[in-house]
Length: 80
Image 1 (cartoon, rainbow, N blue to C red):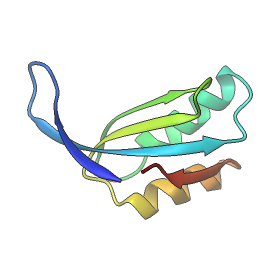
Image 2: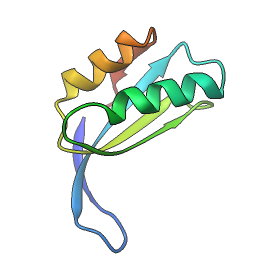
Image 3: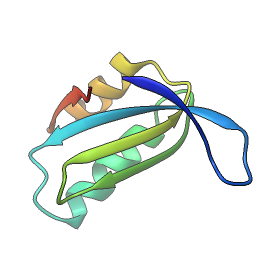
């Protein structure tokens, strides 16, 4: 799901939330974060291990985000 939000002190950016499965440690979080940051249009990416939530800000193609996570060996789904 892509939504718009206002970041403090910054321009309005779209964001996409993903549910990521298969992460077990900080290394996993770093791998998923770097994969997401490598997708065209991503301005910012944050990944939370305990909730399995990844939030990406920018105008990236949601399917490209899913593919990037899956290429790292994790499961991913758009979060409603």
